[in-house]
Image 1 (tube, rainbow, N blue to C red):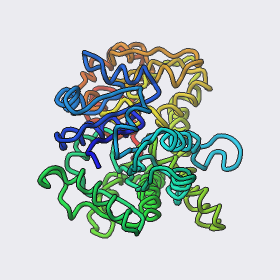
Image 2 (cartoon, rainbow, N blue to C red):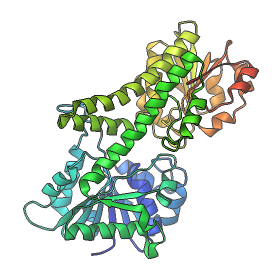
Image 3 (cartoon, one colour):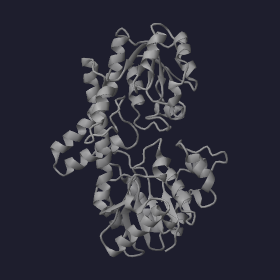
Image 4 (spheres, rainbow, N blue to C red):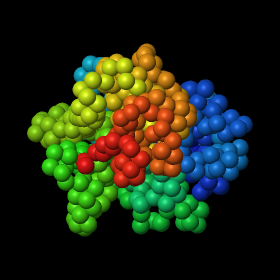
Length: 454
């Protein structure tokens, strides 16, 4: 078996993961392929205008691209030339037919599996990187290993990356998970993947941090982990509403709760709700799986996590409406941040998207600013009128009645808020949905300040 690796899918999973694998395995050739020629051209751009933003990613791509990392649209050739095939294609929520709005749409995944079967000329290890429903590997195995030909061993290797810290997470992960069939071929395939993550001489991920399970446990663990994290976000936001009603401070409540070692402090930050490509999709997938197996009470429980998250964005607009004299029509509001979190340009399922659409229904004039996500914002909000996309936050806030901070970019805390105040209509309001600004200083400047959970 040769040591070459191919990843099908050059998005948020494939690009960063393969760049780091190439860096940490200089003795291996790593090829990232995609049917999207524009995306591949961006990965190959001379000025490194990569299709996604992730801190530290450009530096690694500069180091390894053209040496042992390559980007291509020739999927068939790459699959033929490599013995380890990572599959990182999109598995969005299905929006039609059975399971619409909950189940994963697996058509791209199945098309990829069938193409691998068609073009492969030798035995291969297939590694699931996309988030998939439990027992999807069995379906992939059935497609790949029917009708004779090369032998395929299917592993599950879900990613647990957090956008904004993906490179840091890849270089020093707190754990890696590999699920494989409990057969001699499965054990050999798992060992081969462990060798990749350990790196030459075992200098990358310590072996004790590489956890192995059966395939089904690995597939379910990814859904379960994201569902638990999403549940914590919805839980603290539910407490935040009660804090606002009673005069408690959600940051103080979270700090004391987090000091309990049984609870811990992670994901107890109140805000506008979770976003991104994983949390909502994975929780909905879990809802569908519970329903499919007759676990209806469990399905209702996890559906409540999504319901609470959606309610949080509605509550932000309702509170703003009340504080701005019960009318928002023809007022100007500056939206500071459209990415679903700081240090990424990703706007998938961003809370800002729903807030903007709700404000648009109230005939609000808006100026949206974001350091990295403006292009995606234009695409996401195409067709909505009365929205300007402004790179400079000072220009976005000029003549505005309110500023809503939707993403906790560090740049926003460093702005000259006195200058912003002077440029706005009075009374000037700041709604800091991330609780990332100095509220006392803003009030001293003259702003009316709203926070989540305070």
